[in-house]
Length: 307
Image 1 (cartoon, rainbow, N blue to C red):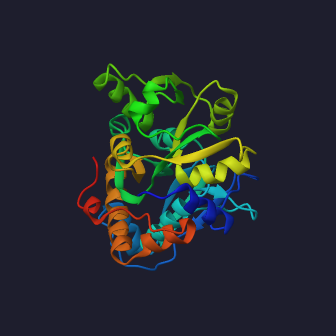
Image 2: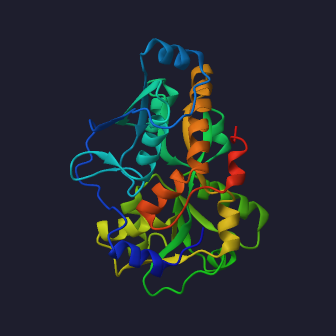
Image 3: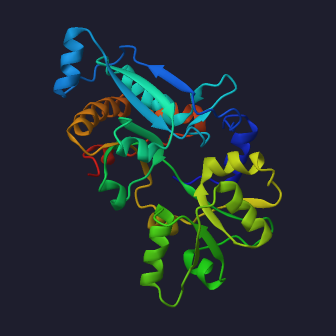
């Protein structure tokens, strides 16, 4: 999915991208579970609960702080692309009652405190060792973030040859891809600086020269730069298609479940609903509503789950 910086600037100016981080509370929650749609449960527990008229409570978890995908609005309600999609999934699964809370998503599912993570997660082999992945529910695209006035990067070779420093979290999709690049391209090494810094700190490091570039999701960038008061100091530049394909060959996002019998059964039900939503255009409708463009995954990705 390729979109220009101008497209997203116009979209943000039109108010189609939500950009609220204020009021993100740890106790915010949302409930969903009305019985629209027809995806049937294959899990024994889910079917039993449905037959008895009782709903099985499913606890979903999100960090709740990454607009426009999941964030707390002015009414202190969780909303966003990912939130609307997971609510609609469970609207189609009448045997369940969905509750969404904010917490550490990965640890929450791993510990068994929560049943499903809703957090814009891409696929990594490391995550697949501990979690089941659903079918994808949206795709994303990325852009370079550079200092305003810097010559836009044209490729990873260009990034390497300029000696630019890029600050990344170890184990992230981008870090894994650039480590592979460095292994395969000994004459064009990219200078990776490992850090657990958040978006705001990383972007400020580009401004002050501690780092030179970041690679992040386009809609997130357009929300964060004004939020951090960095418009005019930083700008987003389009990533060439070859680099995008190398860094993020699928670039889909998924729900995560515990890697156990209960997680497998819940995933099967959720995947049936996601297939319905792809087929009837609901995924296209929700992503377009928030982003102004259809970012639902290609049909070919609905044949099987990643693990």
